[in-house]
Amino acid sequence: MRLLFIGDVVGGIGRRTVRALLPVLRERHALDFVVVNGENMAGGVGITPKGAEELFGLGVDAITLGNHTYRHREVYAYLDSEPRILRPANFLRGQPGHGSCVVERDGVRLGVVSLQGNLFMKTGRPAFSEADAVLHDLDGRVDHVLVDMHAEATSEKVGMGWHLDGRVTAVVGTHTHVPTSDARILPGGTAYITDVGMTGSRDGVIGVRREQALEALITHMPVRFETAEEDPWLMGALITASQPMRADAIEPVLEPARDVE
Ligand SMILES: [Fe+2]
Ligand SMILES: [Fe+2]
Image (tube, rainbow, N blue to C red):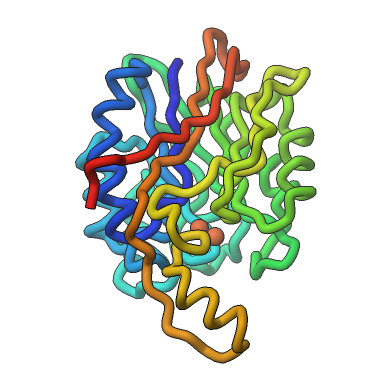
């Protein structure tokens, strides 16, 4: 099983980067599954049904989200009706959407789970007990499980890696948009990385045009943010596995998109 997870796709430049590089990476790595965090697809914040459909059209198997899930009202009904798009499972039960799904390719069943941290974020219910509940629900229905832990605090992400070690194939971190250099296989066989990075412009401040981000940082006044456009990169992680719920390897994918504008 060869799975590419792609970190937060930011804006139009992020979408164009995925469109340009996914076929190349699919061939290079003989990918079985592709999962994408899409919480920043629409203008840098949130996602629309059209954006999600574009990813599914590229052969993406599932989309995970995060704290920007509900920015665009038009996606609410779509979150309820489309099984392959996931908002964090530990949001309030009354919020639109659901937090896990099972996708299948060539007889291999992959469970995908979206979770969000509880530190410094508005997340309705606890991530750790919800992770246990979701795994209980997936039990017997999957060969592999990928968990996207969308969180601000590195401690919470590392903790989730240990909590799920030996029980899922991979725990990958998102939200901070900056790749970490701690990709490894934990002792129980779970692939882990604290943050895979983002997909979009490396020229700005975690996706925002840098002069606007700097103005806000320097003046402490409200500034209208736009998506940075230069120097696009696709960032993610490649996970391989030869037996159920155990990863053989995880390696960061940091790929510049040279001809994308
Ligand atoms: Fe993000
Ligand atoms: Fe986020």
